[in-house]
Each structure stands twice: as C-alpha cells, then as structure tokens.
Amino acid sequence: MKKMLLPVVMLLSLQPAFAQKQKDQKAQVTVDMVNVKGGKFDLGDDSAAMDRRPAHTVSLKDFSISAYEVTQAQWTAVMGSNPSKYECDDCPVTNVSWNDIQKFIEKLNAMTGKSYRLPTEAEWEFAARGGTRENMEDPKKYSGRKVLQYIAWFERNANDHQHPVGKKRANELGLYDMTGNVEEWVNDWYGKDYFSKRHANNPQGPQGGNSKVVRGGSWKSEKDEVSVTRRAAYTPDTKSTSLGFRLAQ
Image 1 (cartoon, rainbow, N blue to C red):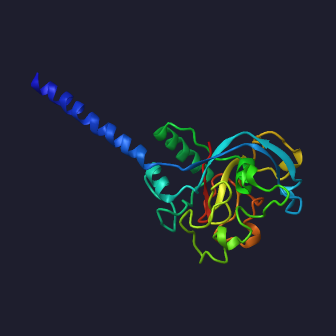
Image 2: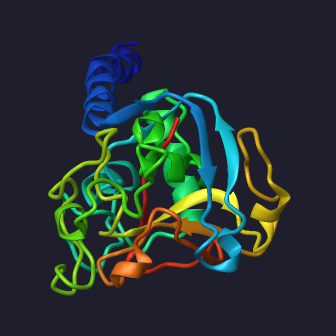
C-alpha cells in the first residue's frame, strides 16, 4: 500500500512547482500595447508606386498595437530558441516567416490568455501615421518627426545591422521603429490592385493570394523605402535578416 501511495504523494508535491513554473513562464512574456482610437484617414499615396494608388478614405475601429517590434527575447520565451542571425535580446526577432509567426501567436495566446494577432495593413499605416493625432492637412512621409535620423535606423545610420527596439524617438502614439529597423509582416494577403477596389470600412485585404503584405522599411533600406505608405509582398514562408513584426489586438 505504501508503494502505491508514494507516486501519488510525489505527484501532489510537484503540482505547486509545475503551477509556479507555468506562472513564471507567463510572467516572462509581456507585450507593451498602445490603444489606438479608430477613425478615418487616407490610405495610400497617389504620388507613389501603382500598388499604393489611389489614396482613398478608410474607416477603422479602435484597436491596440504593440509599441515595439517583437524582440528576440520575447520570441525565445515563447518558442524556446532564437532564429535571428544577429543575436541581441532587445533587438527585433528576424528570420521568421509569416507562417512561423502564426505558430508564435498561437503559443503566446495560450500562455497569456490573450488574443494577439498581426495588424491589418490599414491598421499598420494608420498607426504609423499617428492615428487621429496626425495633422491630416500636412501628412508625414515617415512615422514621427520629419527628420529621419531622429526616428529611424536605415541604410545611412544603421552600420549594416539592426538595433535594439525603442532607441529612436516614438511617433505621436508612442510607437517606435515603424520607420526603419526591420520591415514588418502584416496579416493581409497582397493584391497589386487592391487599393483600386476602395474598401472603406476596416479593410482586411484580399481573400487569398500568393504573398503576404510587408510594411515599413529596415536597417538596410534607403530613405525613400521607409515611408509609411511603402508596401512589399513576400510569400508566407519567406525569411530575412531584415524582416520582423509587431502585434495587434
């Protein structure tokens, strides 16, 4: 009888340790979110590439977006390893595909009990522009101040590598590195002519496609490639040393 009770007693004694381990693991993953009040803005740029035209008015609901790009430390806390080539805990995680990020988000949500996701393309641009705090009569090309060196790591000042998040100045909403440091995956499928369809309310992108949208520029981008309207398209399995992401809710 004593032999049968011993495993049970050992299991009961270990349960608090397991619970504490799970609690500690949850405590390691914190995401600084910024609440963004919804509103109307002009998505796109009539003076830029054809896939950004025409600029058209879009309405968005309230949402939240992370103040910083997801870091290597956050990724490692969830996934157990760091895929980035340039290792730096406080730098954005890179070498992660859109598909990889879906696995990360699933695990993160299970750990935290929250409902994180990637931002939509429209949410990303609205937040990068400063949301409703932007002066719509004088819209900015970059996310934050007009002087690029103050707000972005890009080809001219990055010394050929990424940098820790939050070292440049934030935009009006308190968001960092939306211009420069790393390009960012968003949730939408890419459609070259999607803007011409002028979806006005909370646009989600095409129903399907071959590539996902990437927004912003990176540490190796020239100054004309880090604007708030810049779009790119990569297949969902693409990985790059200059490509990361931030979260939304």
